[in-house]
Amino acid sequence: MVAVSNVGKRFGHRWLFRGLTFEVTQGHGLVVLGRNGSGKSTLLKLIASLLPPSEGAVRYDFQSPRVDIGYAALDLALYPQMTVREHLEFCGRVRGCPSRADELLELIGLARADATPSAQLSSGMRARLKLGMALQPRPKLLLLDEPGASLDADGRELVAGICREQLKSGALLVATNDPQERAFATHELELAG
Amino acid sequence: MNSSWPAEIRAILWKEFAGELRSRTGLVTGGLFCLVTIVTAATALFNEDVNKRGLRDVCCSQIWVIVLFAAVLTLPRTFLAEEEQGTSDLLRLTARPHAVFWGKAIFNLIQTAALALLVAGLFVGLTGLEVRYPAMFLLCLLSGGAAMTGIVTACGAIASRAANRTLLAGAIALPLIIAPCQWGVAGLRSATGAGFPQDGWMAMLGLCAYAALTLLIAPWIYATIWKS
Image (cartoon, rainbow over all chains, first blue to last red; front, side, top):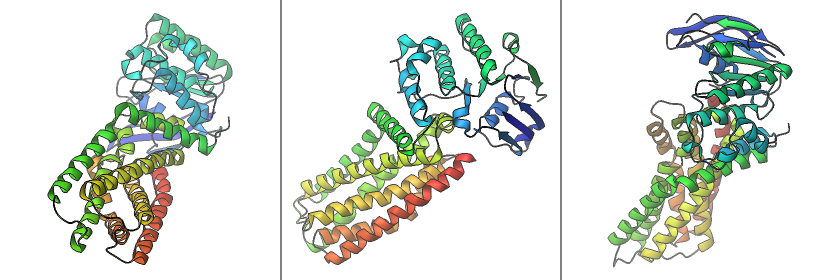
């Protein structure tokens, strides 16, 4: 599904990590561990094609990362004036996939807040919306960066359900230090930092 | 999943319109600037016969200066705002760079056309400037607006990832915009009878070519920056 080959990333003169090589295939749940600043989020961004690697390559065996990869992270910004529903519909239109807005709003528990601008959402609700946007294209690879960080107990249960479903039909990559989220791992990768 | 270019571009265009209608940033910034400068210019020209040859030239260049500065204030923001509010990652995850560029460029084209028509209309109305060839006047405004949009949009897209992006976008755009401004002034001069009509048509040809060139090249530059 995705092959990371000798990948390294530096910012200025400082290397965050180097020489990473691994593959994630269908049914794999790779949990990326490491202390703060070790590069967990950066690695996920590299795989999501949000950042280019400083060395090495990331190869996919699917055609288009923007429809085959779902990505959700705390620092992913939303359009403040756009409502919850509008975010899902917009993402569907630019991706060229059905928005599944009603279905996803029920799943992520934001059906009643669908007309709320994202600037007025709590951090937990924003996290749920980002999960919804990540799941929208039924991605082959789901990348979650600290998915439970802003969520309540129900939200963490939601994440658990999403992860279990994803492993049935695709692959999962989670960056976390949460022991509960490590439970989804079929493999672990620890970044030394 | 089948995604068509027109649908993607329409989605980006809708986002830009929805954002502008809700925040009114461009409207307030550009609109207020235009209003204040036009009223100031009209006050300065009060009781003057603006249709005298020398003043007609000044009025034609005034119109373009106002449109230019309003454009430089408002147009780069369509790209710069994405980086400033952090939403460029969301676009990179879901959209293709050419669709993003064209959606934003079309929004800018519409914005500039409205701005140019507003500025020219108010200016002519308040100063009494005579328009001898209305079709040429209108086409010159639209083609000049398109040329400005091409340059300023391209510079905004190029500068969007830089540290001092707002300043850089304006700094890159201003020298590139001198030629279209000169053609724009020449076109309006002809339309107001201060120059020969054939000069006006030639100026418009230059403006259309400039607009086409910048708008055709810029998406490819933007796509390269998108990946970095």
